Amino acid sequence: MTELVNDNALAQAVDGFYRREILLLQDRRYREWLALLDPSIDYRVPVTHATLGGLVPVEDGLGYYDENLELLKARVAKLESKMSWVEQPPSRLRYFVQTIEVGRTGHGTVSARSNLLLLQYRWNMEQQFSGERTDTLVEEQGGLKLRKRLVVLDRQALGKQGLSVFF
Image (cartoon, rainbow, N blue to C red; front, side, top):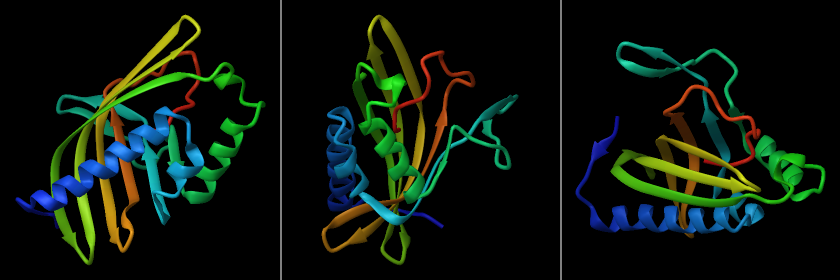
């Protein structure tokens, strides 16, 4: 259970983590980004279906991302190679992340919800992604590490460009 706290230091630490993550992703410094991840990372961007209550993640189906650290490393290796046609030329990325809720979940973990807007430009093509992220961060000596991320996108169908971004 998440205990919402009015802890400015914790909120600033989460905000600092997100700022660093955004810069690394925008600059395509993926190896450094991987260092922000806990070895037991669970990184999910599920497919959703529409209900009267809004979009609901499909829990037992194959998602856009359903990754652990090894799969994320493989994605990074592919993006860094010249064999990733979807990233030739590399995209120009702009991330806009707004932290909306931070709380302690116990045992040195932090829960954070944020809104995400990601703009991707390549050639004359543009993709926009918006959604909500729910993260579990773990507090370590050197700062925060991302242990779990669930991204629920606001749209159900993705563009024709292929999916080559991290959320």
